[in-house]
Structures are given as C-alpha cells and as structure tokens.
Amino acid sequence: MAKVHVKAGDLVEVLSGDDRGKRGKILEVMPKKARVIVDGINIQKKHTRPTQTNPQGGVVESAGPIDASNVGLVCPSCRKPSRLGRDRSADGDVVRVCKRCNKAID
Image (cartoon, rainbow, N blue to C red; front, side):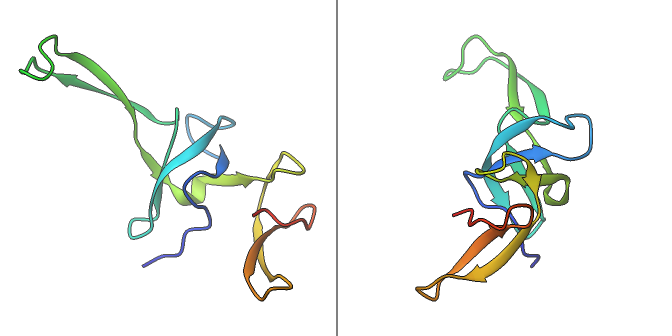
C-alpha cells in the first residue's frame, strides 16, 4: 500500500493535467490506489435514468479521482504548493512541515 502525502480536508493545487492550476479541498483519499478526489476537479458527467427516488432523471456531475502525485499541498503560511517534510514536535508528535518556508502545516 502506497503512502499518500495528503489528507482529507487539505487544500491542494493540481500540478498537471486538464485542471492544472486549479485549487480545491480533498474530499477523499484512496491510499491503495494512490488517488484522491478533489472538490471541483476532474468533473465527470453521469446520465441517470428516472427512478422512484429521482423521478426527473438527468445528468449528474461529480468529481472523479486523480492521481495523488498530480496534486501539491498548499502551505497555509506561504500560500503556494509545496513539498512536505516530516519533523518531530516538542511533544514527540510527527508534524508535516513545508519545504518552502519550514513552518508546520498542522
């Protein structure tokens, strides 16, 4: 199982692909597939037929998964996508650190 560098709820920027440069919040992380679902990125349309629960039917748009390597975590202090490092805090907990400004992310 691959380790993913981002968590659900993180603000990320897409680094490559059709949605390059767009930012969004991570909704779901799939570490076994090394993919993430980002709000408003990789929008896919699904045509649904009318059912009892949805009598109108129609086209439903939802965010699709993209590879985790194509997103970069946006640092809250420098507001730029950056790589992550890990460091021990005074409590002994591991915290994520921005490689650009060396400040703790969480």
